[in-house]
Length: 290
Image 1 (tube, helix red, strand yellow):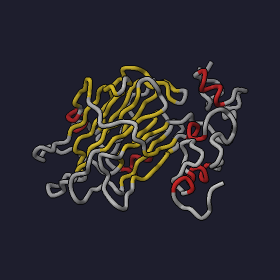
Image 2: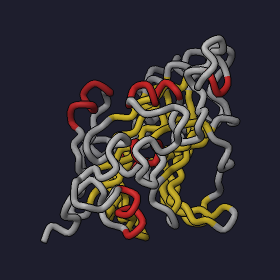
Image 3: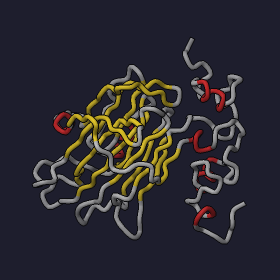
Image 4: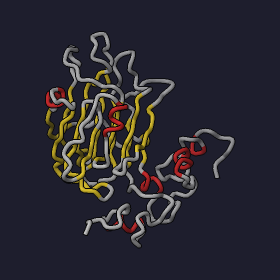
């Protein structure tokens, strides 16, 4: 149903012809139908099943209602991360999330109930092998990022708190001046916010500020999300013509962690859409473990 002579717009690899939050390239990867928003007919569109990451204009740069500066706590912690209790527990993919772990590298862990701290490392390759399925992980900017206090008027600041926009409440994590290197001559930095709505548990937003400097323009920045089953939904923030700038925002759609080709992923007799509507896990046949 796509135009084989067009590589742009809805017909291109990045297009979303059927409006199901999955690009045509991702539909090919998953084996779903790029012209049908709900391939398996379970009342969940394909992107709501798999999760996805895409460009959006949903939020501006937000102002904190209340915040805590956690820069020192993170920089003095051996694992370069800290955990905080979420004011309003979230339910994501059928799992109760009670706390959040925030790392120096711009990686945020939404942790299952009873799971305190997944730890972290300074290297993406190490990080990849140390995560597990006790956390849903959001990486708005996964490229070596460091805390620096020696740059006049551009010291790194990492804050955690709450914000409100258009009547919607958010958990807000803000990274100001995350640096590419700790060396004095490496003056490049990037700033971004990660906003997680408290009234809906299926998505998060990332908003970026202009990159400062010459060597870190963000064009090779790795953007990713890991679901609770360990799937790493990976995307690339890449622009041939310019830098990552404050007109860029991403939307992380968590998804239901279900199979977009199977109407009843966990085989418990209820369709994935039915389970999501009543709050049970469509990926586990016995949600409460009884």
